[in-house]
Image 1 (tube, rainbow, N blue to C red):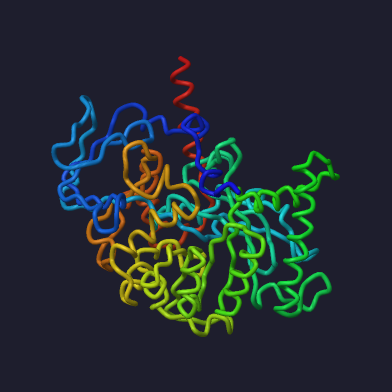
Image 2: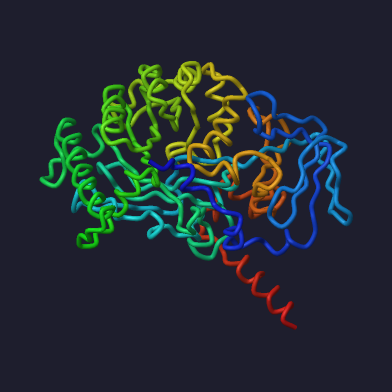
Amino acid sequence: MRMIKAALVASVSLAASIAMPAAAQEQPVAFTGATIHTMSGNAGTGTIEGGTLVVHQGRIIAVGGADTAIPAGADIRDATGLVIMPGIVDTHSHIGQVSGADSSAAIQPDVRALDSINVRDSSITRARSGGVTTANIMPGSGWLMSGQTFYMHLTQGNSIEEMAHRSDDGSIAGGMKMANGTNPIRENNAFPSTRARSAAMVRSHFIAAQEYCAEENEGERSPRNIGMDAMCEILDGERLVHFHTHRSDDIMTALRLREEFGFDMLIQHGIESGRVAHEIAAAGVPVSAILVDSPGGKLEAMEANIETAAALEQAGVFVSLHSDDYIIDSRLMFRHAGIAVRGGMTRDGALRALTINGAVQLGLDDRVGSLEEGKYADFLILDGDPLSVYTDLRETWVLGEALFDRDNPEDLLQATGGQGAGNPQMNTHVLEREARMLEDAL
């Protein structure tokens, strides 16, 4: 079975399909004198004091100490006293007005989140104002399978295609949302009404998918079924299952289904995952965790606590942190990491859980999640310790372009809220691009 990471890694040739900002192509930009958290290498080894970061044409071309070579003609910016780190990779978000499956069935793998996302929704700029540069956009959890997720690159795109992370073959990258527990249970004949029936329906669908995919592999053409095509991608290891599950017994059911059908899985939420941390570690399954410091809303979240991420880390589980925006506002992800540390997680582990760990989980770590030569120039500039409540995010850069600047009044409004902050994004970047094209043509 092919590994999901291999399927989601983009080739260098695909870089041209992503709209690189023209301003970033004109000259290199070098930041000097900063404390740089690269998030590369082994835990605790990726911090450079008095460091230099050089970006050009949307990529990182150098990162290192004060003696790092800076190209002639570069725009040199003194970042002394500032902190630079990778952009946040949010492994579970609902920004962009995303929606998925409807009430017609409990299992709908043919539905695609990307077909419902409004790229001009203000929630995307709000997420950038909190430092998010890549996000896994998910449909809801009221279904056993609510559809295909979308790995969004938070650029200034005029279409969903311009904001997509892509796989090796050029297809838009994403996973598959699944859920168990009380969320998909309904008094509706198309849905399960018990946990046991939920698992039975999932098993039946996977067995049907195995038969469909086997026919395809043997060259026997069944009538085209786009939902089953997506199931084949799951069974082949080409599409990661994002499994919404809270209670410890539901987590074990998810692990059981994974073992039976051999799909790659990322546990989403895992409110009680600390109770079965060693079982999760033994299975080699990663967790995208959320720490809710004021639980409520559903019985399954009653046992939410701030020690969960620490318990997973100590058991050897590979952990990221996510917003589930609006459950945690995308602007509060640094606070989220701080809460994880307060609950016993290591400081380095919490910062990695915001950045490189999520990139690895989504199979995007060859391009985002750490500051390394050749990767996308997605980074943040802060005016202090990332985990301090007194620190402000000053700038968010995506593909070598500053898309959030706290000194810009419009950007500040997105970061702090207030009248007008929820208005749809303007198309100023489109107008600017067209103006540049016209100028070049003349």
